Image (cartoon, rainbow, N blue to C red; front, side, top):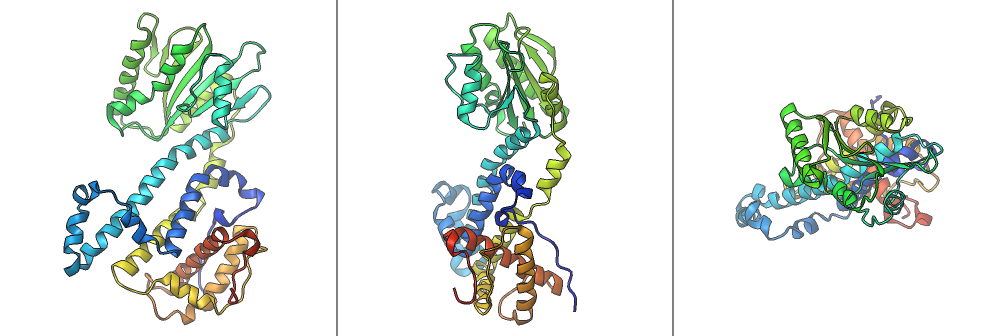
Length: 383
């Protein structure tokens, strides 16, 4: 009987040049996916629960749930549920901004005289070319240096935010804080543009609130020389300006206009990033297995899979691409599925069941690849 098995692209398993750009941009979330795989295969759900701080005992209801746990499985499960999802979302939030920065950096075409910061060292070097006394680089996301006109160097500082409706007034003031540090050190009319780019376009009222708060913060720096050219552009001189843009297209248009800079096709890069399966797969499977073992009190599918794979001889050491790992995982899943009897699979259709087994195998490949020395990356019934 033939089964329709969905394709997967697992960048954690890929070492080819074809996926190098996507791996570089998504390195932060690929690292999180590997962390989730470790939690899953090393059964570290208990450790996540133990790391909850004491505030969660009363603020998140952890103490109450644990008090009721002896007579109610759902209450017993809640601390694990809460700890796992908090770990994921706090870890993801911390990484998302870096991905947005990397997308912007990779969209700017590198040409002679145009340099894009790739480290804090670059950031400091670029700013000091216009402001020799400047020292802090920790708050700047991206700096583009334009040296095409010889001595007349220019920089574009880009601060990226995913959205502007979180964090309240303090967060809005933080949008302009790095510019204030630059402004304090400017000794002459340095050609500096400061771009606040908000990735997600928001409701008009939220946008106006943010822009007005930024303008009021800038007035405190030099109210006599501040000129509001439009609701999205504020100037202090002919060569120093602050701009606020909403949406990726406007951000890219502003970068392009600033320095007549060539940009890569954003749709090509975004399409590449949208076809990746590492994070969502690791997250949802780790959660389903947590539910299996800590709510339903079933045997872990991970352990059951490991038992069945011990009977198989297979080797992964020579595999370099996601597609090669996928072919092996498909073969093993089709072979194992008829003998999968003991544990719980979460789907009724045979195709979904085989996909789930195959996805577990792919995550095991990820675990084996990163938990063992590279020289010993062989998985078989003999290991």
